[in-house]
Image (cartoon, rainbow over all chains, first blue to last red):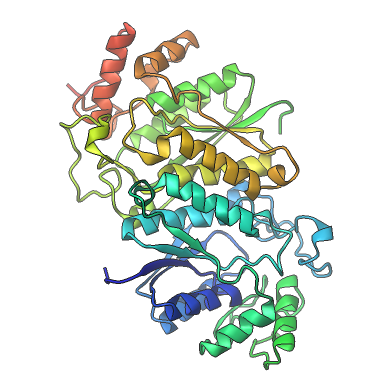
Length: 231
Length: 231
């Protein structure tokens, strides 16, 4: 185990979490990167995660297999549902989007907490964002604060007076601001995959909500979009 | 899905969680039972869970595979550590016991929360107990209340004003009181396995902390101990 500050960083392989990893590293943390294989459609995202973790010098990268698809309930994991292509995911008037995975951030943060406790890490970094994804209850700042309060009571570190922090550096940033920060830190976004239905080579569909948000982000950031598209 | 009250019940196959399942059923809940295969030493516990879930008429019983052993840090999952046989697990002066699995209840409750959200269940039942296991931070009532507050912010049900309850019917009971309640409800404790190192036939070692607590519980309850021992 390295000395100095240690963080567990949740990494999907998408644009947001890759930026978070770059930010954690920039803040001087030794990064222990955690990804999940949970029956989501886009396995190319996991390949992207491996590539990004390696490029950014993660101390370790673990991929945990989870069987959330057994619970059903989301277009991201339930292959019998169709992926929405029209409605904007970011519109709060739509309520909770179809791509919502039950209790996903709670589950991911809990597993990160287990590893952080063993590593004696000071922080967990997660790329939740309240601006672009306001339909998800577990992306809100009040959820994160409640999780942190719970974690302080759940762990040895909390009992001993040094609770593990949940750090959400993207929470108030627009997609454009996230991209500008990543570019400033030298992150190569061509290595990241945001698309819900990317093909085997990691090429994006360009039509799903996630692709649309990402494309608009590059546009608004005034930065050329390096994303590889299917056509 | 059945009408009426639904609960997700966490079941290890041990004495405590089997009693909780009997209590949830007695309170009129349709029970969706969740067990975890997380690299713990005693797989016979899972066989016990299957048998108990079937006997108590669970609507469904799911066993989720988790790879917590990758994180290390506990005698329950790290096969290179020795199992403690002498020191009482319940002595708070000992601090956090060696059998502590990092963030275990947080992880288990989070996955139960995901299933509860999909099922539109009203409650999650968990057999934590603050009397016999006070060394574990995630068995304390304040942890449970913090988890419940977090869950209310994490889920659709919470957002819609009907948060999922975390029910801990054993939290203030002694082992003897738990056993008396189970016997009152007709539970057959011979089917449950509490031992950390039970053999393939589910026979208990009689020496580990868990065996000792269980044996003392039957003694103090004034009930004949039906546990099958190895010798």
